[in-house]
Amino acid sequence: MDQQNTPRPDGTGAERTVCSRCGSTAEGTAPLTWTCSMENGTRRYFCDACARANLRSIEGRLDSTWW
Image 1 (cartoon, rainbow, N blue to C red):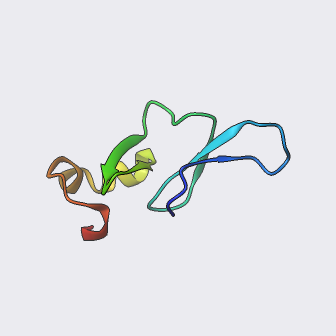
Image 2 (image 1 turned 180 degrees about the horizontal axis):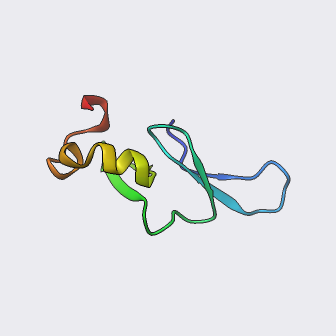
């Protein structure tokens, strides 16, 4: 999933943040427990569960395609 902050289809203008790994969503900006990563010029967000499961790879700065 490449689009991270997408407008809601109901036209309210509110955005939601989508986890690049599992697809879970959060209303508005990413919660403080989520992780943000820049990969190939694209900002990617990962939910707390995905970030916790792949912490070593994230700290090693591996692109998410490797994990």
